[in-house]
Length: 88
Image (cartoon, rainbow, N blue to C red):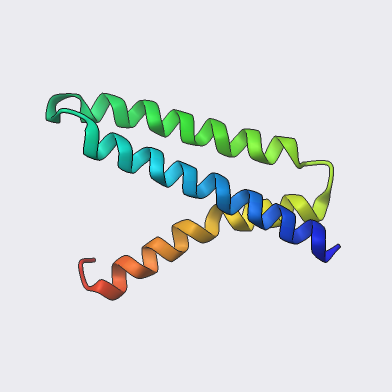
């Protein structure tokens, strides 16, 4: 039970980090005129990866809960980090 949850948490965090890195890559490597259209493509890709991740683990409840928390945890961490720095 605990190992299944931790496996799901690790998988969710890994996918969430990849999602974040994809967004940063588009933001820093795209020319100013194409950022909006490329960000939309990355947005669709990120959600497809999230849905695929949850679909792959839906049979095991504890892995599913861990993956869901892992997908949300990196976003929450970045949000709190942004607020603490005082830029928010």
